[in-house]
Length: 251
Image (cartoon, rainbow, N blue to C red; front, side):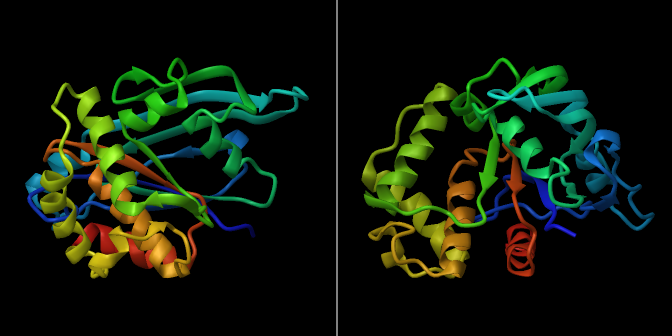
């Protein structure tokens, strides 16, 4: 069995990093993507009323999605249905070549794939019409199995540019370097990272654990206000990544 693809719906709060959600169902289906229809489990009776309310917010709707490789025309996705609500974790499992990675790439707008049918709505907007950078600014964040290094670009500058890109989209003024430090330093502390990591080049010389924590830091910086919600796409759900997924929900 190949490693699963996972998607987590993440929201902001008064916490320095992320908000916990008491409704986090984990969906596992060992079916080909051509027949998959993922639905959340019902919340247990002990769940609070507030959690039930937050679990009802619809984020991503995929209906009848078909997609093929642009150069060859080979069809990979054959009618995928997927619904993700706020506070949920979904794991899509299948053998190699079943389309898990293709689904991830289609969602973020990879140019090597072409959507040939179906719909993708994210927060009620048509995702298919958006460029990859527009999808990112709308709230899709893809995590990589092996995050790449970016020599010559400090973590601090990279995070500041990412934050200001989202602020510009929302009509907010850009933050200066000094203003941004008070924001990012709280998140670095919450993740138990060394402050000097901000001065290092993005992922250059980072250990595997540092790279994963750095991705969570990048994700958290993009949450501008308590009402913000993102979807985090994890390409591979290994034990170490799952540990950081749990960290994300409980900090």
